[in-house]
Length: 292
Figure (tube, rainbow, N blue to C red):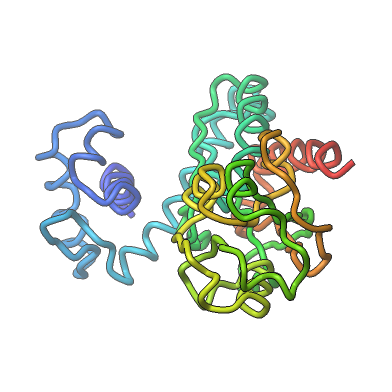
């Protein structure tokens, strides 16, 4: 490619999703962004984006460019560091994605990692969407369930996410304690609104609680936690998050089938970079304290 500026501009448009967002990141006028995108599309003879009212969505060709440009951008950053004699420097962006339920553990860890590497910009992305590492959407993903099977990803076992079943004091005042599985019909439970949720504890709850008892349904872990704290019903919470709320009562002894395996996932193109390796080593060390 003759003009790296155009590639970098298209990469930022693909990453940010809008011309204005890319212009802000690059520190240029939005007209420059549009000119670069038009120029590279004309030079390549292919549409990299679908234009719509909400912004720019990468086409398949645009996604290919995003993946290659992300890897190239990281590799350039590593090269510059080595040329300056700072090959072990950790700087630029570090994009980490995980389930929102991991925030309690990961936010302090990410904060400490950034404290050790003050030139680092942290982007911590949570939610149910699987960010595409092959398209450069994240450097490190922490995923639950079965081991990811994408051929270009490096997958390492990380830890088990332990869940417990809890109720607030206000709920117990109204309904009393759960007296066993046969008593579930007499209680109210908080659950995921997605009946196809792959979370082990969600599957267990739907298998054991009658439909009528699933009275408060949410779309994510944050709203489920708030419902639990408000006394809407009995609900699941990670054990490390529950430890932060002494007003909650554990309803029954945790079952091993509620726990889920967590995996560290990186793309093969970025796995050996100094930034990713430094973070993985740091995170594994932190996890030993979490599971002790």
